[in-house]
Length: 208
Ligand code: BEZ
Image 1 (spheres, protein in one colour):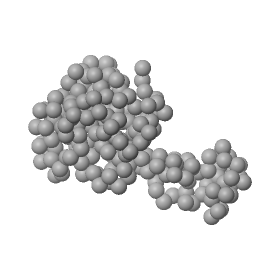
Image 2 (cartoon, helix red, strand yellow):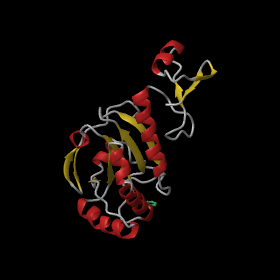
Image 3 (cartoon, rainbow, N blue to C red):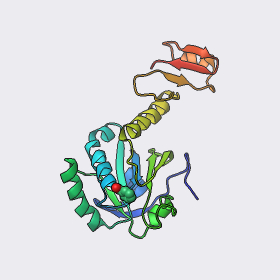
Image 4 (cartoon, helix red, strand yellow):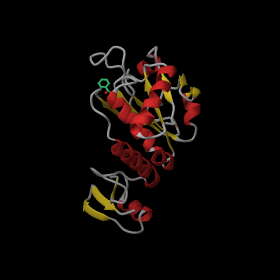
């Protein structure tokens, strides 16, 4: 069965490039960006791994730990990381899960048999400190992910949690946010003493 937003991310034990982990313990009190890719030593994956490594400070400043997965071994991952570092001009420090027996890929529904019976598609799970899945995205094997969007959606989730708001289309930090319809005008006035704009009774915007 596929995993849904709000589900508890399944826990697992795995060997990774930084040692054995128990997933929930490894997440600890942080957020996780758990992403699969089809295979080591492939071009799109190499750019994605490099980009994730280059963005290490961006993830850390948001309290997010990246962790990759493919259905290869630790030895293969370790050898490939040398290529990633070399070709993408970075130093990859986050763990990559070795899932040669597909156990975790199947647990997370990362194997889409019409694409491949043995390699994972490009799945993304953003997991919060309560181990709840807060976002899922699935990209095909031949399309690299947009890491600006991954950071943007983490910002949106964390801002939504902090201020109990929602974010409009294409929102980026600094722009106005939306007061959810479940919040009355009276409560909105208490939460947002700076005032808010009512465009329609169901569409109210506020600057944070
Ligand atoms: C790649 O990472 O370049 C790739 C991997 C599997 C299928 C297609 C592309």
